[in-house]
Length: 251
Image 1 (cartoon, rainbow, N blue to C red):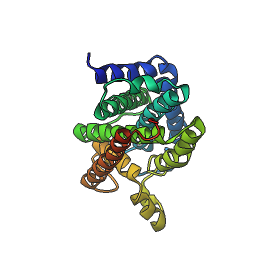
Image 2 (image 1 turned 90 degrees about the horizontal axis):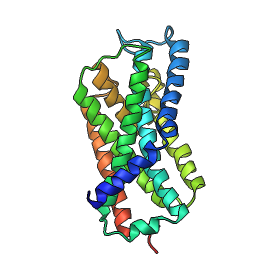
Image 3 (image 1 turned 135 degrees about the horizontal axis):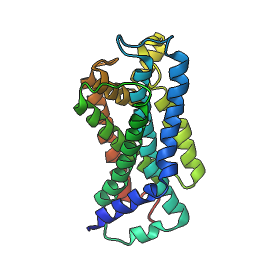
Image 4 (image 1 turned 90 degrees about the vertical axis):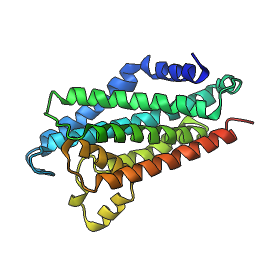
């Protein structure tokens, strides 16, 4: 097993050994959202024709869980290594920048996908889902998880203590995911907030992902694909540059 594979395996084991917290917990949270919003609004909200509101919610909740957990995995792993002081042992290895990136982001992608699959598995008990365009689903899931894994890497490098990381998650990641159309179509918003939503890259991740299930979306899936791919490349490039420079990890 090569160096990057060993680091990737270690990062996967890190979240899998506490799967009750890192996987089951987020799935339960998503199910609570589904039960509360689905039961309360099922007969009052109609977003797309022939699609129930509960079915509409599931892809959004699955993608929201994927994004939040991909971010949490890479960011928490890096900040824990910095705070506990064991990052120095990783710095002594001959691993390249790209090895670091692939291992940390790869584990984040895997955790995000596992949580998302868990949400779908439990959701099947409550509603029937269609899969109109599976390749779109896979593309947006992988790109979204990669983007958030890379963003988590940036946050983990920048933060020097857990308070800073929590602030980044609470004031950046959480608002952007909740205001991205998880629980509603942006066409139900006033014009000003529709414009704001179009500036949020998380909206395109969720809207494109939802298109793969229903074949309908608020904007063109090709536009969503272009925005998400551009954001992923930009964030990944920044993360790689910071790793290469040893930002806040090398004396």
